[in-house]
Image 1: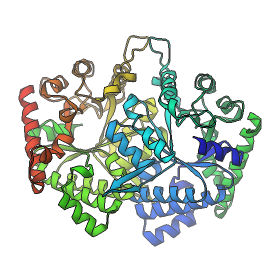
Image 2 (image 1 turned 90 degrees about the vertical axis):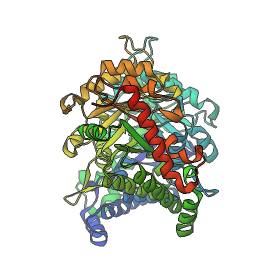
Image 3 (image 1 turned 180 degrees about the vertical axis):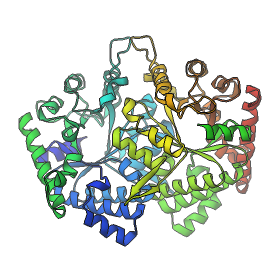
Length: 307
Length: 307
């Protein structure tokens, strides 16, 4: 997690821009150009998405420490979408950005190892180690227990990567299972949180945080505060700021006294800033940058800076 | 779920062949041919996997009703692997096979909708509905609650598809969370099972089973029997037979009195049959077919046939 934390400190910005590019967010002229070159096809759509993402990345690279592509929005365009995902990751990393792949992957044993290779490490082909998607971090789902998390750890150590485990998600129905209380008095989310501390225990870095982070939604500030206290070595990825309704006051409990401990995500509010502000479509990236700066300042002033 | 059940009845076979193609399962001559054409690259590996899968599908198409590609083994070869996944799905469907995509996807709202479009439905590009992966069923993870399942249902209804929700998985650490008992006396897996009945309630088909199935491992036969009794409208996908240790006696409790209610998966034991039996590598597909027939006969005789 140290690389992410250092990027946050360098840019004095504890936020991450989600790259969830729906076609409806993309300027029409950009869509038209891609369709005229590749047809009104999955390939054409994927080409437009890549163009859109590059503009966003160029505009945000000096502002945010990290971007978070959401795999679903690439998979919906088939393998052509996955090619755009790979190109987006490479482009962002070339621009110095830390890439959190939001895939919420989960499986067991050698299958989970294949996901780790795909999204964080390399795949061996005829004795060579080849990178596939090679993000810097991957979100994962804990429902399968340790068998779904442990295969990530050797890959994270070898390639200096991290994982974020879903703990308390930002959606309205997250409590349906996560808030239920077990016979021992602990909720499911608190139990998973405790496991994150355990799973990450031997990977703690310079700032005290391990390679096993947690996803904790901004829309549940009380649980966010509870989990921050209970999980001193677990770095948080906090979705739910902005379009989902969370504000700077809601995310503040995620941070430690140094202003570290969490990175807050916003996707829609950044990508659609040009539409919300009525900007010309050619200025979509500038509008995104302006919203990213506003979000940074909003959160940094609330938490009293990053030390 | 009716299409799957009809395929099971037509072939008198309640099993599904997992397509989890590790490179070590593939005959060396097939790997060499792909590497000499495309290089020792992700593209070369993905080409070998497609060739291997086509041989398996040709050999199994008259025996099994369904195949289950595991997404992780395709994602590890990047977008080239996803292109092979797409081509594998198309090839299997052309051969009359029902395709269960094992992606264990999970997210919320419009993001989950994008996964549904990607893996079960179509994606809209400039007013056209284009298929991306377009499997017949998708495995999904319930940790996020209803917000992660409900977006699947309109897509399932519209395109005649189904989903299988992880309930009680086959791995050793599945109990770490799933077996814990809530304050109301129900385990997490039983709670999720109950939600499957609820989520699927208005999608029941001709045989009484809904479009919302459940993944329940063969390695926990007592829980399998408990869940079969508790969830009369939920069709089961049962992993863990064969290489993971489950036998015909272990999977028998998954079936109803008609010999329906479940489809049992085996991957490794089928794909590596040629290596286990010492067959010539040119006969890998025939060895897979022989193992698939053995598995079918083993299970069908244990459950007393399919009616």
